[in-house]
Length: 354
Image (cartoon, rainbow, N blue to C red):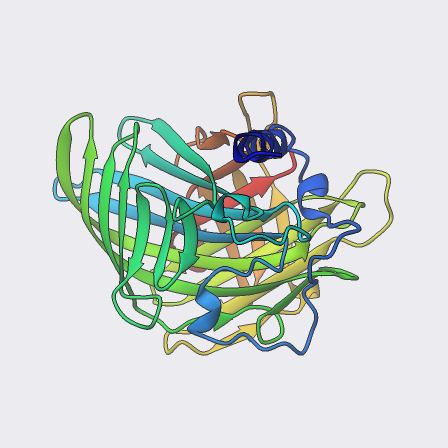
């Protein structure tokens, strides 16, 4: 089999995976293969673990943020880099045969105009086409580059059909290991390794419709890798990263149980204090109640308003605008939100499996 045929097979695998990516159970549920599974007792080692983990099936690096320009106009930002392993048995020195597929997504929500624009890139790993190593996290011309041994400070550069972004990123708080020292259990036998930077300082330039504007804001960064996340009885998740005006942050998610199943819903939450210390919340102390819904492009009923009780707080979380659905190779909702109630602030919400 020659390299052209291999390239066609890999491209077919990439687009085939993408075509069924809305079935998150298939994509993230694991299977009978040789990929490693996330197991407890394996500590995260930084900075080494900032890079890719090809022995695990799935991995993603996630940056979200709320920005404001010099005229007071506001924006939501998402940049995501996905890696998907497709085969663990290929042994070859030919870089075109590396069994890793990559997808990056970029979205800008112009809150003043009510628009939500998105773009994406796909690639085989190949010889330098995409990857995450040596302080660079990239696919083609979209690159996040660290300016030292640590992940942050870093520079993100994106040139897309949506617009261009150059962003300087620094960490205002230290990294937080999610779950049990970075081991995040999603259901019995299914887990990921997971850490977050809960408050990033963002500054740079954003070019939309030919106009370049200076922007500043705050962001959140996640890195997660696994070979099996969702159990066959789980339908998807609702994930919140909230940054309060008083300097604290709250991250939580719930993994929803499919209708007709009796397994309990999995909930996780962590409150990060002003000094960077954190405490994991008891699942019994987290109550998420969806409210008003918005119909996505395929008719999905996405809840765009939530009532949350957690950490002795009653909060109302609302989408800054309903139209923030992602409609590329994955179908999900990812958007900027406001927080009101016992704490005020901004954040991001992700909803999958609707």
